[in-house]
Image: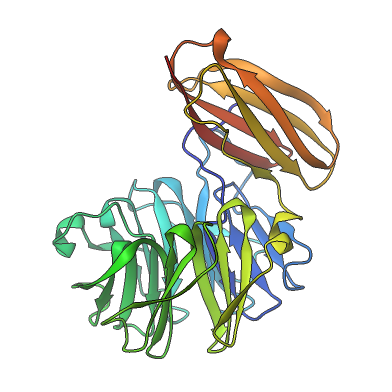
Length: 346
């Protein structure tokens, strides 16, 4: 088994066309799809059987029940016209890791990611071009976490500490300050929501010019917000958390997603010396391998290599067999692959 050392498992991308039909990108090689409001999920794998190094998928967007797009590492973009049953890969125009994709119409779409770059298409994703580079924002950012467009001109971008807005299709942007590390933004008319660190949910009623903290749902890091209509929404977060938002009140339904999904938790403590605990969950019986890699991608230890039953599992890892420094631990169970970073202290 060979694992990527650049993936940190969580629900990073979410798209819903109503309160029953939705798709999830969680930084793996697959898209997950539900038709019953999150009670059950099926896997969809864009492209041919993946090989290492994996281009992991970071976001997904569906305009309707048929037309959807997903983006990921190394400029990867796929499109589907049949609800995810089959996917077609777009020509690669950038080597950056893409984190977000959004379409205002079937033809007009945008993708964004590392180094604050924005791509645009006007032919449904068949071809793409870079329209914004980091210097165009006039500020230092860690990249674009999310994009939302009301039409071919008016849009918003979530970055760390601000929400940017544009009126010319993404050529120029104006920042509005927020207090949190923003990960996702969504608008219904002039009402906007942005979610991010420590469960914070902020809201704007003036098209994104100003933002106020609306509510919070604890310490969970929130990754995605999506509203099928003005009164009903979904919010996703770390550890497989999924919240339903109804009539301006967020109610937790975290078990809705956590149950049907594989999860790999961050080891604790981290950094560690001499030992740390790694926990993971299997939604069904699977053959599991859990391995440790160095920063060169070389496997240095194999902790698990066996068939395991459904449920929660944990292993106490002792670092005495390793030198001090940074390592990656990778879980593979069937098609599921997840990698996290840990540090062994001197």
